[in-house]
Image (tube, rainbow, N blue to C red; front, side, top):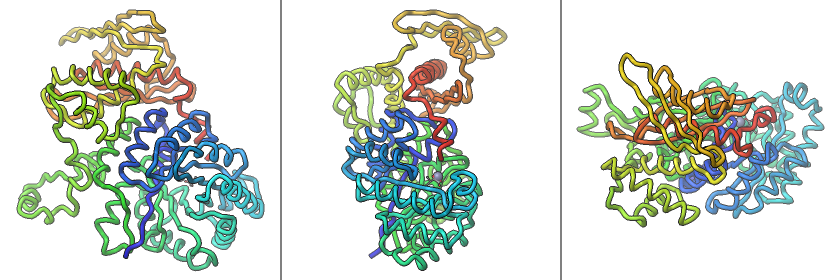
Length: 515
Ligand code: KIV
Ligand code: ZN
């Protein structure tokens, strides 16, 4: 009987710390639901003390997710732990993850604490966290650069105080696989009460070694891995969930443990996270890149046709590549539509929401014959574009482009209930459209990213546009999808402007500073 390897997903916490990867509460809920469907064991939903928006998101996810443990992050201080404890109260299964730095450089320059003070803070935070839940995780931050004797001491005390999971972070991505594996082995051997806790690892990818380090640790005895979808996370990111899960599953000969992840949800989750954050997945990315299962060389194609195993070590279907099926058409009814979206992890909050999205589905079905799962995903993302509290709505767009002529755009926006029109010219139809919107809004924001993605193949595919705007240090991602990419672009820009003006959905610069 193999051990269980616990998968702890931190896309919504460390992943969101990626500059520009801010997510609204509604977007985080959609990701959390998909992670639950994927059978992720622990979902780190956020850092409640960082901002009211983060607190509310963790609380909302704690109230909705039933099959995964919902975890909140807290620094080792009473205020943070209290916020985390309050936020996870609605959860069926709740964890608090508290951390404090243990490396000499962090203790001296960041915390300005002595090693004794660090131990005291850790023990006090764990005991306080235990008053909210029995499931407490402790991380000695920057463990990868901490002094071994002190690391053993703080961990022994943390376990004594009630931490059931000890997470060893390579916070700055400095370790090498053989070294990190040895560290885990030595900790398990030298800490007298190590058998009373599950050892976990949390590796950053600064040297491109996050997955390799995590796997070395698992081979050395770690039984939880912290990871994110698409490897999203601070700086170069975290270990990627899909690579960890598939490496362990594909190389069962080398691991004495396995996960319970439903791998067919990997590609849909990758798409959802990429779509929401506006971070594209590189085509040659393992498991989830567009080329991960594509064979170009004739000799490879020939081999795969004769026997798949000649050049493929996994099947594309096993990780969800087959999931983009043609599912609905113009004759499909409301119930089939609702059921299909439920399968994709989306449930409507009200009949009005269902009716509105269904009407847009019918409109799309009139114009596009084959509707795929990805079209439905985009349609739902687009629903989020007109939230109840939106102040700006795209009412009308007319563009003109002609070879040798300057492109122009006429935009009609509804701003706080009043129609406003503007016309502008630009270097292209999209440029003219954005300039016309700005003529009305004068937002003072800076465009940081504009990306267009074709949702399915064919010239009648929907275009999905992500726009990232920055103003006064606040970053938001807007999304829009339409069969017409100029309209999709305008929708995404207006969506970003609505988010920028809604304080709750802004990214939180203080979060990055806090950790
Ligand atoms: O990288 C890190 O050390 C962290 C901790 C909060 C676990 O994210
Ligand atoms: Zn981290």
